[in-house]
Length: 598
View 1 (cartoon, rainbow, N blue to C red):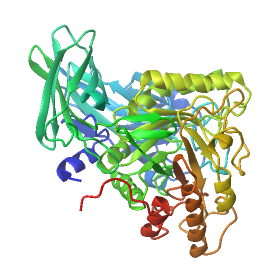
View 2 (cartoon, one colour):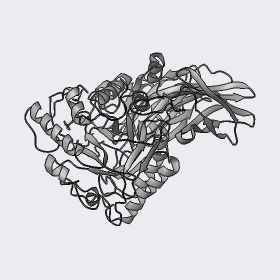
View 3 (spheres, rainbow, N blue to C red):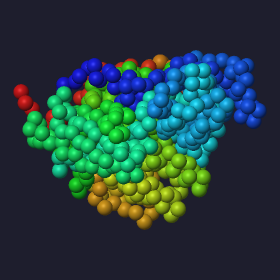
View 4 (cartoon, helix red, strand yellow):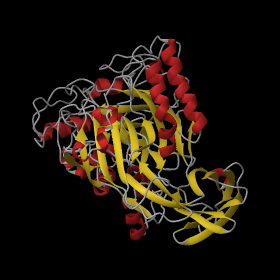
């Protein structure tokens, strides 16, 4: 795989590698910070007092983490941030303030002006601060998070203490913050959907402040060789075009993206107003297709057997927040251990993780974090983030599936409750309306309604009975194959219709190497003594899954230890517990597929 290392590192350092502008400022680092338990910052405008802020925090780490420099485990539902936002404003320029994720509800102020309110702890938002910035401007952010069970919280504990597989809360800013400069007209969003059967790329472009004379032009290249160029006018600030991206350089007209050969094309967009350049954005895309044919999943019209690892994206010193180097190390280790993909679990990840999957070659399942109490309020709260959840992943070729719910969390009565069934089905069809180019898993684990893959969780630690439970997949799908959950594969009045079948969680064998002091650690099954016994159990479980005919893949639990859960292949510091070559042999089953060119 050829790679331009300068381009690779430039993109990896940018908070959004698929939308790079030249003029941007990283706003991470030390900010003034305070807890506001009595809410006086808002009710009494206390945030404007110089003495209101009593400490500093390292953004973008949540105050509960060591890297935040605060490391406080007490629950403070309201927090404030402050930092200078010094900008020398240029005529006909706009300044966009980006937040990748702030948990949960956030308000943005510049000086004494309230500019923006956002709800949703996992998705990006942008604030146009043009009219308010100057050389002495001050930025304030208020975050409020009561960690309620009716809001999407993923793996955060909604109780006072951690329990089972729910962990330390995340409050406030926990992903990247940055400022961009653009022209008066600028590219607000682009959606890039490949069509490999027609050798084309479908573009849906949205330009802010567009006039009747605004145009968008651009070009496509592959490894420095220009493929084609395009130009289009806009109607109501939008343009839709299809670009022919075939070339004679490719062996078969196109350079396909796959885990084995993760080819990426470069694409550049320029917004023009009466011929003058207003905005220039550098991006990339991959040409690939995901489909279901009978009981198989196909990538680029070839069968794909998915070897995924469950990745919860926690770090012992940073919580849900990682550096680009930590993300890179994780993706490299996932590949080294023989996996061809990752299921990002109960978390909407940093965009640079998806970039690394794109460029290094991992397929990925994107997952919406769960809530835990069903009501019309939780329904509404999901929709506050749902469109942005899809938008964050839609241009990444590595993302081949969306997981909407997990193990009936938040829809605990879905087996019989028609309202909860309708809710999951509504999310399924909403996803299809937003992005029809990927697979959709409605309720991963059990009690499924509408789904493109029958995804079953089974932590049976006995290899023989694990394999026997799936000797007949149609029969298994019609019942309760997992001897650990004893839950039906499908909700009442729903059934198997021949979809691909996958064991999307299994394994979870505990091995505590002592990298974190924990009162009581756990994994699935009986605790084994010694690394040799653990490896034998893991190998036997993997062999059992490999022996099940007609599966479209599996997902092993899990990549790394997370707080009290010690069933990772990596420890709390994301270092190997085991020889990766040994793990690779287990995961691949010693199988070689595809052509060998020697």
